Image (cartoon, rainbow, N blue to C red; front, side):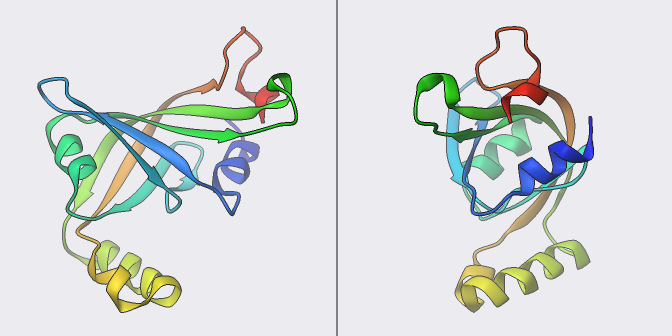
Length: 139
């Protein structure tokens, strides 16, 4: 994977969907703009005390999907980034740093909502619509 992936993933403004599932297979999808790729193999996201955090605590597998509409369907861009939880930090310096960053952008109320920082390992990257072209041609 390349630095081009990191640049595309972190482009702002951006919303992406984080899909998770519970131990029992119940599915959840939530929208986030705060996911950040720190390098080609690592994604970090701050979560409140929500269903996404609950499900990731039960099942470490997830996918983050970014979709960019185009003028026609053939011009749509996007990727699916398959993830596996490396760590869930519910306290400590990583969470405090995230809260400080969020407070600068969203205020103290937004920062107070953060319950954890989840660090993921990137398992696989696939194009939004996979016709065998590889993800590099879809961003």
